Amino acid sequence: MTVLLADPVSEVVAAAEQLLTRRTGAPVTLVDPTDLGGSGRTIVLRVRVAENPFSLPRTLVIKQVRDPYLGVKNGVTPPAEAIHVFDPDTAFLREAVSYQFANALAKDARPGAELLAYDLSARLLVLSDLGDATAISVLFQDSDSDTVTNTLMAMAQAMGRMHAATVGREEDFTALLRRAEVVHSSDEVADQVARVVTDVPSMLANTLGVDVDPNVLDQVHHAQNLFSGGRYRAFSPSDLCPDNIIVNGEGVRFLDYEWGGYRDALLDITYALVSFPGCLCNVDLTEERASAMVDAWRSEVVGLWPALADEAELGRGLVEAQLIWVWLSTYMFLPNDHSRIAAVREHYLSIPRSDALLRRWARLARSAELAGNTAVQAHASEVVAALRERAE
Image (cartoon, rainbow, N blue to C red; front, top):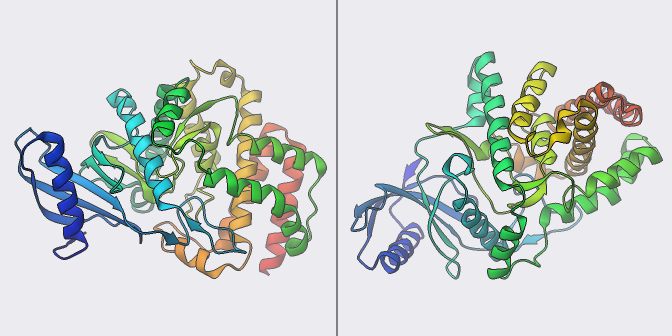
């Protein structure tokens, strides 16, 4: 982290001071801005509160979305065949709504920081400071095997607590979206998944010589509905790259809610099971680790979703969700899209895309085998063989 003294940082600090002064009714002075590493269009700073008339925390985090951006965003990217500009206003408003929604949760179920103040017109958030936390990606890379396993279980359990706390509250979230006038905005994740379902069959055929069995295609279409429907709907931050998950004294916390929203909770746990398909991050997931993660997550939600106590039901759902994620990862990283690949190669746990795709398809094949899904097992095994042949 680097201490910053010049514009545009001073502009963000001044805007936050004005916001907090309006909110508290007394002057607020913020000093010592420290860069926490926002993306190209976002400035994220830790500041110290020098004048604190209303018992504000000693330090705060301020985040401002400034300009439209082109390119890759963790978890979802523009289609390779076109330049796509994400709408920063919609992204900011969705993030602000997600924080507002999370503020209403019990503290132990809140997935991330507390929202202390916001200015929608200035695209500015003031958040509680989660402290000098460690990114979960660093823990995965630098810790011993037992610590990695325990961290994965803690992450899965934190997901489960978040899911359990938000079941049945989708109308509340939608009401906040409506108030912020983003309820009808496009869902970037769902939009990209629609392109995945359309384009991957020809991609597999033309690049790898693999035809998709109609049974598998039916399962893919069913899995697509997990983003807009699903049996186990709960809130998700959506962007679950390990670089956006931290561990501090209070446990696991999730960062970056720009695409926060409701979807089937199986998508969150399986995002980790196939090792973060929206980027090239890789974690060594043995069957024992994967099983421990699923059990940790299920322990938090099975009381609300008792059907998940049935191993066959759980296995079916896990394979279905993993299938759509692996297809999405293939859509993103099988083509030679150098700008997309270069952006995610900067992630802490990134591996070469050929290795990432091979591992993800192999994990899908094994999961399908364990669940007795012979169609998906055969499909994934055929892709694995084609990827290996291509790499030789």
